[in-house]
Amino acid sequence: MMYFGIVAMALVAMLTLVALFAAHRVLTVHVDPLTSLPAQSGWVPQEHALSRFHVRWYLASIIFLAFDVEMLFMYPWAVVVIEKGLSAVVEMFLFLGALLVAVAWAWREGAFRWV
Image (cartoon, rainbow, N blue to C red; front, side, top):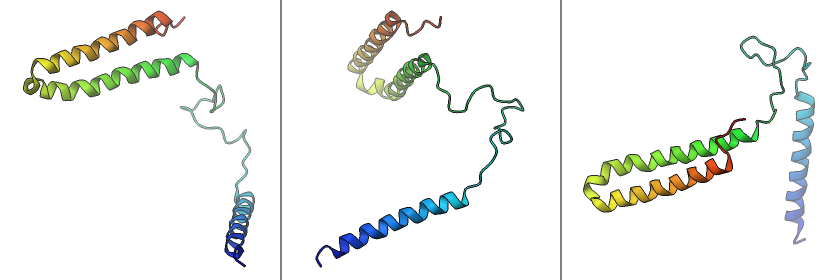
C-alpha cells in the first residue's frame, strides 16, 4: 500500500506519453517531400537542409568569437583606463599578447589557409 502512489504516478506518466505519441501520429500532416521544397530565392535547393558544413567554418567561427570577446573586454577598458592608470594599460597589453600568441598558434596550425 505504501508504493501505490509511486506506481500510480508512473502509470499516469506512461499513459500520458502513449496518448501524446498516438495524438502526434494521428494529427501529423504528411506532405509529399517533392512538392514541399523550401524556397531559396525561388531556386530549387542543391543540397539537403541538414547538410554539414566543412570543419574549416567551425574553426573560422571560433577565431571570430575570440576576437569578438577581445572587443568585449576592450570597450569597458577604454572607459576606465584613465581612472586605473598604467596598471590598466599593462593588463591590456598582457591580454593582447595572449591573443597574439593564440593567433600565432592558429596561423601555425593552418587555420587561416583555405586551400
